[in-house]
Length: 219
Ligand SMILES: [Zn+2]
Image (cartoon, rainbow, N blue to C red; front, side, top):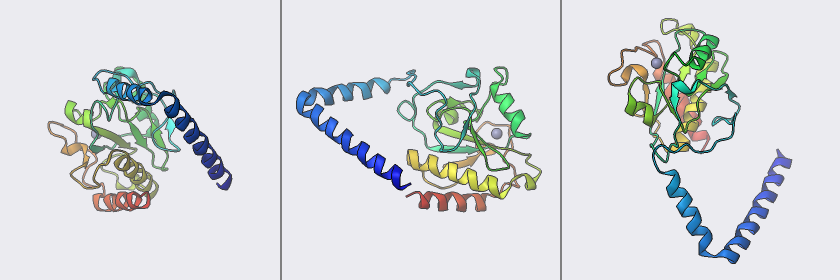
């Protein structure tokens, strides 16, 4: 950790020197170009370049969903993100992963949290996942699936709650989403849905306390 810190300090120092040099050489032309680039990426329908295999949550395993189950996008620049939708898979982790890889499934979430607390990311947060069954909610939210069945509370393990709470807290932190039940909702609460997950046995009080604690810890 100490070595990494020193490395990053050195990098920042070198970068500051480069930026300083470039600004001195090119002056406002550099800033104008950056501004143009920023505006360009705000256009709808733009697919932001991304690094294959990159994840938004540190330590997540990357498994790509089928392109049929999400829409390439450039959030939060084209669509703001102000919600998290909580799901339960109604099955095991492997079958959920297979379903999201299946172009015929027509649905997938950004994340699946396993009962062992392992996080699998299948769609980047910048893209619009088809998980909520409501176009507007898909465009404004990040979907988190949890491995298990709604009628089996023992499926909702300590490790799962803890990992999901860290994940949700990071999403709230990244996009400035308030940690409350207006912005962290169950699939059942999405208008027009016929889904009931995460079900009545999902412990919202416990979950929201864990998200709030992780959010505070990350401040
Ligand atoms: Zn759902």
